[in-house]
Image (tube, rainbow, N blue to C red):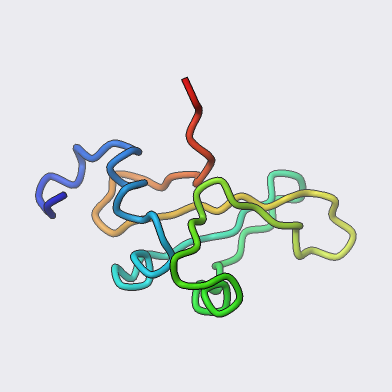
Amino acid sequence: MGRKNLDRYTEDDWRAASGSLEQILVNGWPVYADCPVCGLRIQADLKRIAQVRGPHYNLWGAGAACRRVGCIGRIQFVIRPRGAVGEFVMTAKAVR
């Protein structure tokens, strides 16, 4: 995948370009943890996640308990690649 016409990239293209924490960290793309229950949005500590899970860990489809005290929600990771038209919820790819 080249670096031209970023507005034409599909979610699959971004998924391929951010398949591991290592790729995301090299690209310097911010990732946020969003809780759909309480609305908490924090920037994910990718370096810490890589320390715990390893640099080849894939955030697509991953989730965790919300960090807000008392919230029962589970966070979703959201990536905002520089140059992209928007941001993408990093959900697991639907199997057809």
